[in-house]
Length: 148
Image (tube, rainbow, N blue to C red; front, side, top):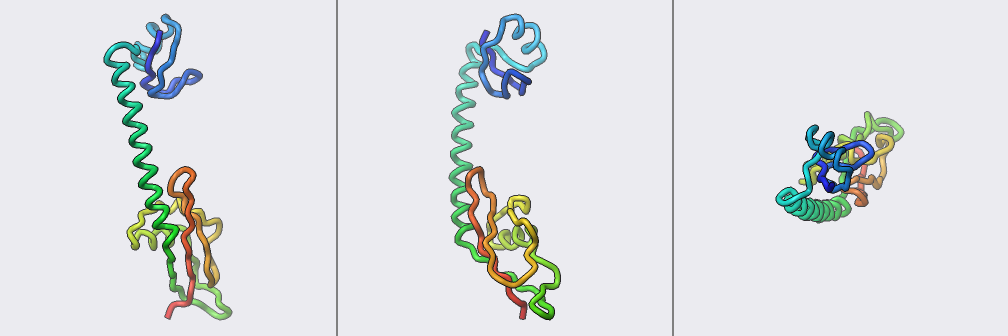
């Protein structure tokens, strides 16, 4: 019997997939526990429509991510910080600081997407990768210079 899974089922598949299972498994377990619906008539057409709309949504998200990636790659952030003797910073530049600076430029990025291994603790120019989307990791240029 062909069924469309409405929830993730261990060792069978993920929600939204169509599977061919034994009649008894479908009638006695999957359907009563609302884990699947029979793939007949309206449910099958709805499933096909759902697949098409999911593909469209993925394509749109990818296009938006590419636009954001281009904006991030062309951005240079200048961070003015207080500096002590010997060029040492008071404090450091963290992933949150970079995410906030990008936000002020109209590029909304979660701080967890800023791939900064260690906070920046000295003056200089750095290339910091920002994970925008799967496979898209542009680098923003961060210039750390003394304030004033």
